[in-house]
Amino acid sequence: MDETPTIEQLQHRIAQLERDATEHARVVQALSESEEQHRVLYETALVGLFRTGIGDGKVLKANQAAARLMGYDTVQQLMDANIVIGDYYPAERRAELLRQLQKHGRVSDFEAHWTYPSGREQDITISAKIYPEWGYIEGVVMDITERKQLLARLLQAQKMEAVGALAGGIAHDVNNILMGIQGNVSLMLGALGKDHPHYARLLQIQDLVTSGAELTGQLLGFARGGRYTGRPTDLNMLVRKTADLFQRTRRDIRVSKVLADGLWISNVERAQLEQVLVSLCVNAGHAMPNGGELTLTTANLHIDPVDSERYHLPAGNYVRVSVTDTGAGMDEATRARVFEPFFTTKAMGRGAGLGLASSYGVIRGHGGAIDVDSAPGRGTTFSFHLPAYQGKAEHDPRPGPEVVGGSETILLVDDDEVVAMVTRQMLESLGYTVLVAHSGRDAVAAYAAQHEQIALVLLDMIMPSMSGADVCDALRAIEPNARIILSSGHSLDGLTARAMERNCDGFLQKPFQLGALSSTLREVLDRR
Image 1 (tube, one colour):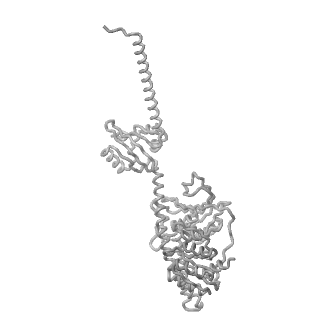
Image 2: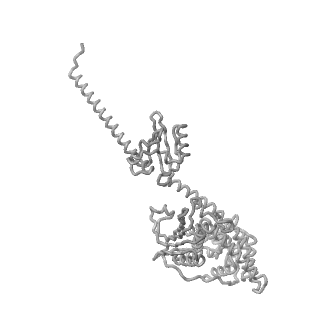
Image 3: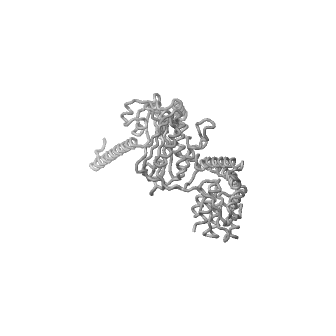
């Protein structure tokens, strides 16, 4: 016979049951809360979470992010559509995804290109795992369209930087060669009368040198880091000038100008900006061989920090210029390469493929950005943005250089013997006494010994062992007020720009003619 439990035992047992009931309730509550937290996390996740059937691929479950990625505003709309996720994939990628799932049971970061019924496209990546015992696949889908675009932009920028460096190096070497030709032509023209039978031929050679220098100028304009001597300019003025010029050359194209009132001023090198506008108009003309419409538009634009990445520019005020044509337009492959030097869709002999590349370099060198919007059948729009400048536009024309001589002593520093020889002869023809150094170390030694007699140093920037910038510093250490003019086959960039920041007195771009040499020398020497 069982013993009758005592009151104490019954009370203890009741207390134990109460504790168990409380614990059970706590566990149930915790499970309920955990399930709710899981549901909230699932529904509010920024990445798309989904579940599909193994056999038919129909979506069985999804969160809000997945619904949006699949083109629906809500999860309910997605489920009502009864869609098959495989319909978004190209057939070969869908087959590859299934093959990997069946072989490995999972996939990680599987990239694919989704195309929607509306025609919209995006790049996605999927990580998924197959659960054969339960008959479904669970996975994560992410939109990587912007990431791929940013990566492509980075790769393009790196490629353009490398090509720009190559272009700048080529242009420097070619300009040194042209300097030798130009110098000798200048000397012969000065020695011969206009009635000499070779005078006209020499003028033709000089014109060819100028054409070659313009071509290398385009390469230097493209080369990364270009810097220009700007003047406050109303870009409406340049746009009007270019539009009127182009209209006279292409009567079959109707040219329109939509110019903003009160357009902000830009600090630009006018000849370079005119070159950009002409290149864009000529490029548009080639896209409209049978005529069409060309529209040049200007506008003020404030870029705030939110839109900075979209325009690839720091926040601030900018002037926008757009050139729009009604031509055939470009496909994506052409549009991606349009700013590359030597890339052209024209037939052999119809262009070197430098116009748009140099435009890219010029705009970038001015602290701006240029882009293109185009598609086959709907024309093309090139737009560039330049920083706005606080100030008034300058309208006074610059006088051309005059040949003026002198009698001072000049130290010429250039490691290229041909360039040094012809430059020395040009200086002597102007009446100067010339000392020549073929290296930076020789230049510093010569200046240390004779700096009291040397009125000015004409210094090449690119030399082995000791660069022009280092020579400039060494000369300033000897004589803080030394007058130094830099000369280079490169544009005003890189080492040259840093040397100019050391308060050098002038810059001569090779190849230079006798008039430019004489006027630059007198401008520096006559300063008080």
